[in-house]
Amino acid sequence: MTKGMPAQTQPKAFDLLASLAAFAQREGVALNDPTLIDRFMTDARPRLEMALSDAALIHGSRIERLFEATVLTLGRYRMLKTEDIGRVHGSGASRAPDFRVVLDDGAQWLVEVKNVRSDKPLRQRTSMSAAYLNSLQCYADMVGTPLRLAIFWSLWNIWTIIPPERFRRSDGGLRVTMQEAVMANEFGRLGEVIIMTRPPLRLVLDADRKMPRKLSPEGLAEFMIGAARMYSGDTELTDPRDRRLAQILFLFGDWTVGEPIARMDGVEIGGVEFVAQPEEPSDQGFDGIGWASRIFSRYYAAQTVDGDQVIQLHGKAVPEWFAPLGAWDFKNSRLPLWLGHIEPNSDRIKAEPGPD
Image 1 (spheres, helix red, strand yellow):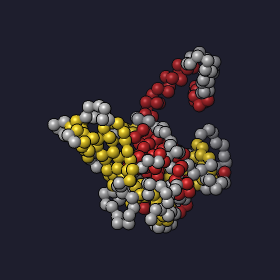
Image 2 (spheres, rainbow, N blue to C red):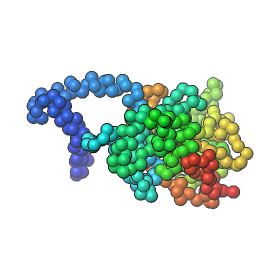
Image 3 (cartoon, rainbow, N blue to C red):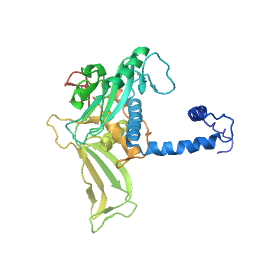
Image 4 (cartoon, rainbow, N blue to C red):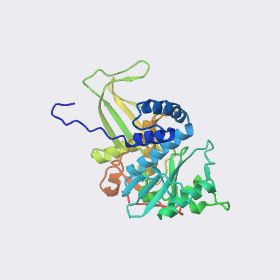
């Protein structure tokens, strides 16, 4: 600690104390019993080991945290809070959904998060029993707030938010395909957009000319990076806002990044260039590079997943990523940009005016 700086206050362990107190009550142990902590830890260890080995629990918990971080990153909300914590006393068989969100227009949703993965890319579907759905709806009715299901189709990295009543079966349960959910998707109310720009995006890493630089006999470029430049086509992006968004789209967008291309300076290596472009470019002058939530989910995965293993539940939200889109200078920006807004019950995308 730096001399003269006040000591940081340790957060009070409310959640941990609540778990300890529940254990003490269940086991009939007084809170001032000197053996309580050891007994609590002995009880907790196998339960924690079981939880960490439960793949469904770990993946589901990570997706709940992903939803939270995605809403914070998209930034179009007044308040977001965890709803399913604490005890609930009610007259019916109710279950609290995962989150409560207050939208920017003051409307509220209760949101239950669901992770769906099928190895068959074109057969993505999910279901929910009548009993489970009724328990969520009972809670929503008691507090007078509409219920929504936030479904993460993990094979496609796609979020959809849907009203469950629309997909009720005759037996009271729910069944929905990814295609149906996309058509009914209301995530746009939380700031979801499809981002489009003109290909390609280029990242140029310049060699530091003051340091040794060469191309090895195996064709490997050996140099120290002196500078990094971003391009939209042949136009260098010098404005910090343009450059920052281009970097995000380049690193986490849908376009394929090709193999590095050596840039020679005579017989010495001048740097390398990476080019990102859609696999099948259109002829309309711009192409989609990803849904904002899909772009962020790749960033979140880089923080929380290693191969097929979850290594963290919590990742960092980055609300500064997409905040500039609300006031983007479409006419003067050197990064050509179009934003597509998807409305429920429509397969049409409304595009905001972009550069000519």
